[in-house]
Amino acid sequence: MLREYVYWIYILASDRNGTLYVGVTNDLYARVMVHREGLLPGFTKRYGVKHLVYFEEHGDVEAAIAREKTIKRWRRAWKLQLIEQANPQWRDLWLEIGD
Image (cartoon, rainbow, N blue to C red; front, side, top):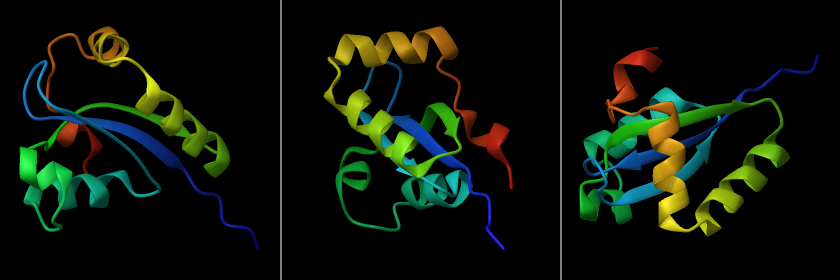
């Protein structure tokens, strides 16, 4: 039996217009929690990037990875515009993805 997966592209920020991080995962809640709690060393822990400000759902892993790579190559202004369109108040969307 094939299991259907959902994949997520997400953007974390340190603050409004702060440092950004773009990632992809199949478990958004768990992945963001790892970032928020600083459980792994790396970029997000070093720069305090832990506010979920944008996410989008994909049903295909290849499409999700391709989208993540595309967004990572974007100019910063384009990433900010993407966030502003979906989340103009830069709310931390963490509570909206509750398990």
